[in-house]
Length: 467
Image 1: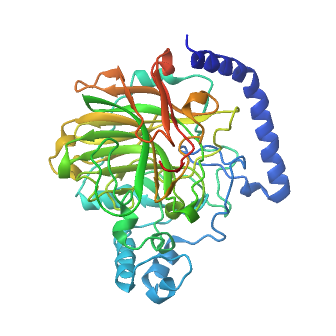
Image 2: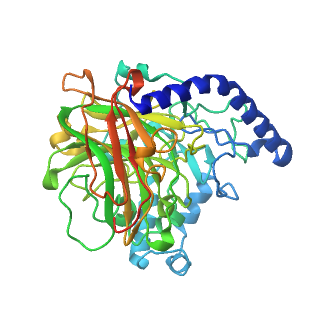
Image 3: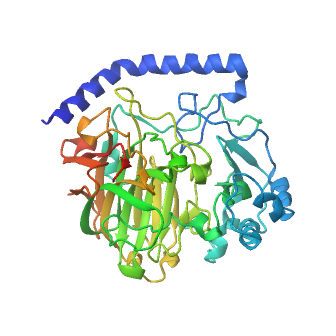
C-alpha cells in the first residue's frame, strides 16, 4: 500500500463518523440563512450541481428575473451602440455585434418556452425536446435512446461527497420559479448578449480558446495565449470512458492576462485538420461565465477546433435531461486538508452517437452526423486526462493550485479511470504521465489501488511565470 492509499483509507474512515455531523451543520447553516434572508434565497440546485448552500465563494446572480419573451424582445431591439460603449464589452464592431444578436435569435427560433428559472448567475429556459437547436440543426425526428448502465461505474460508491439531486426543501429559485422543467422539455442555459459581448466575435465566443489543441499535439504557431498542461494519456482504440474529477476553484487573475483553468477528460481520434474530440470537465473561466466559480462544461470538435463550442452554445449537443446542467456552477468545492468533492463524467459511443453521463444520469449526446464521417464516427484512438491553463505571460493555478506530490486532501485528483474498448467492454486505464511545464504543473502517479481507486493520479500546480 502506498502512502496515498493509506491517506485515502484514513480519510474515508474518518468521513463515516463525520458525515452525520457535517449534514447537521449544513442543515443548521441553511436554516440560519432562511431565517436571516428568506426561505427562497437558500437555493437548491439541479441534479447536476452540488448544493449551493453558501459554502462556496459567491458572486451575486441576476438581480431580476427576465421572462423568456422579454429576453427575446430585448434581444430583438438591442442596439450595437449601447453594447460597444460598455466598459466590459470587447465586441469588435457593429457587424460582430449583429452576428451575435442574430445567433441568439436563430438559436431560439420558434421555441415555445413557457417556463424559465434562475440558477446562480444564469437563466435557464425549458425548451421542448424537439425544438432545441441541435434537433433542428441535424433534422432529428426522434431523440435517441441512451446506453445501458456501465458495470465499472457502479464500483465508485464510497464516502467521498459528490454532486447532489435537487434539494427537496428548496425546489424553487429566488423568484419562486420551479427549477425543474416539465416532461418533454429540457433546460437550456440562456445565451445572452451580456455574455457574448465579452468576446470580440461570435467565433471567439464559440472557440475553446485561441490556439487550442489536444495535449501532446504539435503546437499551433500563431500569436496569442499559450496553453500549459499536466496530463496523462493512453493510445488505445475506445468508445469513450469515465473519470471522477475532484473539484477545486483555482483563481484566474484576468488582470494578469490569465484566461481559464480547467480539469477534464479528452477522447481523441483522427489527426491534422481531421482531429476530433469529446471533452468534459470543469473550468474556471471568468470571461465566459462572469464569475470565479468552477463550471461544468462539455466541448467537442469535428475538425481540429476550427469549429465546436462550449456546452450547447452553437447547437451541436442534443440534451435529454430536464434540469439545468451544462455550464452550471459547482459547489461547494474541496478544501485544503478538509472535505473533498467530486463528480463522475462518462462518454460512450453508442449506436452512432457520443452520449454524456453525469453522476449516473444521461444528459444527452453529440449526434454522429456532427462528425461528417470522420474517425470518431467509428471509435476514438486515445484517452487523455488532466489539467489545462491558458495565459499570456502568467498562467493560473491548475487543480487545487498545490503540487500533486502533496497528495490526497491537498492536490486535485482524478480516479475511477476506465474506458470502453471497441467491443464496449469496460477496461481499467493504463496511463502514462506527461509533464510539459514542470516549473508550474506536474502529475503524481498514476497509482493503483482497489475499487474506484484502481487507477488514479494527482494533477495540477501553482502556475506562475516561466511555465
